Image (cartoon, rainbow, N blue to C red; front, side, top):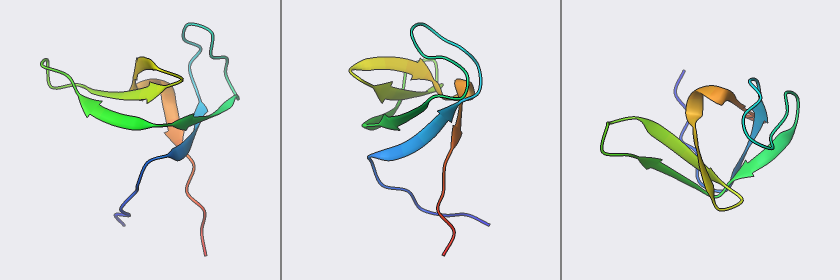
Length: 60
């Protein structure tokens, strides 16, 4: 099932990267595609590859 998301949205860190640790919940302020056609999330002003995160979706 597809669900449309709008920023900001919450994600859980599933792979430690930079100052972000596994299990931490953070907000994505923007989602971008870089010239290499890879998706990155902008979190606290820094870009991270999407594969480090799991999107948190509230179910009704």
